[in-house]
Image (cartoon, rainbow, N blue to C red; front, side, top):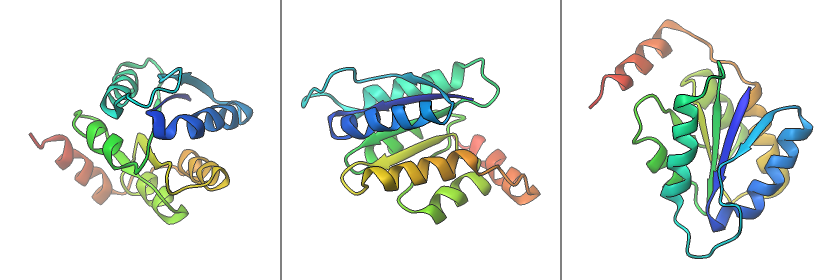
Length: 148
């Protein structure tokens, strides 16, 4: 599984730690920036890069991880793209539910709220939770994809 990851200045340190954690777990990780900390950068740029890569990836199950201060901004930006199901996650229940019920393909994390160990646990849970593929879940995803 290929994982595309991006963050603004608020999520820069967490992104670096998560890249190492993911690589240690054996994942193929692509850093979509920012490459240096820039207090004037804007989260939509990194959300667009990550989402674009998820949508065009040749990997059969690409995933994206986005990080900003609250997680809200990157989540809003990512969900503007058809085929993206971005979810902001702050606890293990939400990490599992976003994958099990909604087949989330982009994880959004709030850097101001989470410590490193919490972020690692959320990412691990999110990556290892399969989509349940229940008919009602599939129906809801189809309905979301038909929204304009």
